[in-house]
Image (tube, rainbow, N blue to C red):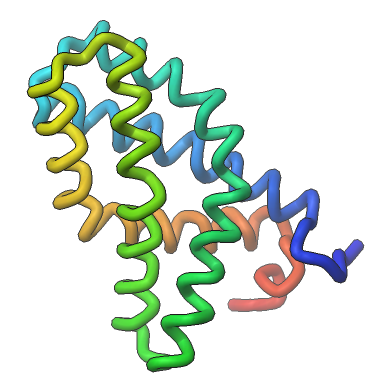
Length: 149
């Protein structure tokens, strides 16, 4: 079943699955190994992030698609797609991430370190997440993705 509008249940499900899985794993790695948070703090942060990621997954997917469309107007190159993925990821995720860390009691120093580290690491993570999201959209047979190789 194909959707004619911007909302498609398969799209929302794929975006949600991708966001929850990717952010749980990547967030824990950054928090524990780079930001110096304890495993318990990171687990609390990652647990809190699940409902947050469920809530923001589809809006982020729409935001990312908008960035990709506008980037493609400038260039159809894979470099532009990667830059668009990177910018969308950093601009959307950084404020959300800071709020999660604040809510679980991370110190100001830990929040600044984690968000800054995440922004730097997002040079690769945003691009990797873009590929992962595209793969999830294919797995979920989202219209426009399932037909692509």
